[in-house]
Length: 529
Ligand code: TNX
Image (cartoon, rainbow, N blue to C red; front, side, top):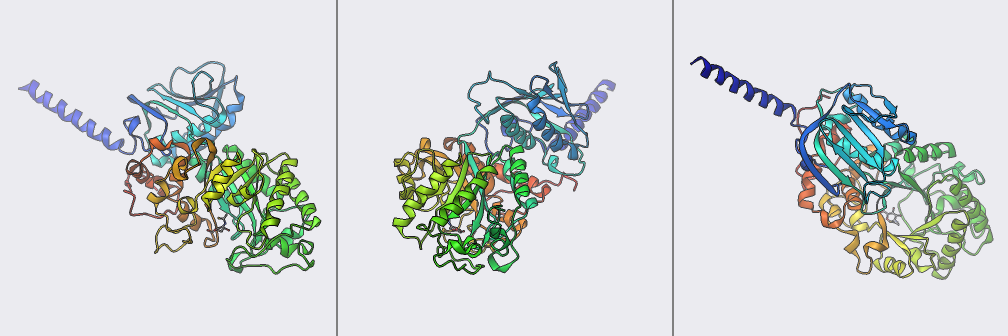
């Protein structure tokens, strides 16, 4: 009798423990393969158990690879606020045996390339291996998503900080995975752009394209032509006060992005979309009379004078200064919607601009219209509107960035009832934004012709970061996945559940997202705010 009773209490006890344990672990995956990661990794293999990040855990790198200090510090900074553990980076000659997150450079794992990584999690440690610090940085984004959503809080949270055991091997499908922010139609300050960078970095994007000048505003200081900012920066759509980045501020943004392995591609749109410059510099006009500043939303009414030598003196100065501010390989020259530039003027203009860009050591990117000109193989065409322009680019041997407006424009409304955004290219609900494959969208454009994908956010209708976020989220993670995860590994039916699991993170990070009915949102009450 006695034994039966104590046996019974033992069973009750263990049942209670099991319940308590499962309650404490509902916010974390107990099976690595079931983790809701975005973008979806190439391969995930589960193992038994989990690794727990504790206050005693060490973030470690080898003394042979001091170049890993910044990414290791970035990881510590990501983990410190929510865990309250105050991690620092240990640099050591000896490999740890337990209780460590080890970041290591390796060349023994195949296929990882420039950005790939392997994450090997056992009960003893989490080992992040990559060929480059960049690969380690991408892996850290995976680590963030493996931990409970509350890791994103900037206040101390309860834990436990467990990651399911197993091995993830991962690398991107495309080398160029970006988003564009139009800071010309409405100006957004340095802090807003940094937030934008952090949000795209979280989903492993690696390019931020900044649309720095348009009819309504000029947003970057050019020291040889100060009138551009003295006059051209002073307004925006709707007549607000506009603004611009000084070169020092811009360098700060370039560095902030580089610290997250994101390349900034600066765009100065031309020969159309140039009213802000035409209003600032009289000699850019046919009769040397400056135009008036413009605060409307029309496109296609302005042009540089393609037959005036002054224009090219100006462009030499402009691209020299812009190239000096740009560590990345590309300068974007726009070239879209030049409706008042004659075709016979447009074609040689773009070719001459290409020369200037190349003379400054950079490769040219232009919107798809630029494929009418003779493009060098080093140049890149960004497909947004006309498939025939993009396929002509392929025939000319240039690589294509896929930004089809009807699929990838972050400024399109989700739905007729959405307040912000435009709808000239249609409505793009979250599923429609996800359900396409760059490699099969346009006949004649194959995977090998494609540099990557970019989702542009034009800012005619958005005036602050909260409004930006409502168009970005929840579509952005989908564009990031299209760029990272190969088409055959993706399906909306499966993806939508992973996206639904991001809701808790959006909430904790204060992301103002559109709660689309297409997504099975999952939130828990576990997190203390
Ligand atoms: C077309 S996309 C434009 C932009 C507008 C956008 C609005 C492109 C290359 N040109 O000037 O801002 O539509 O969606």
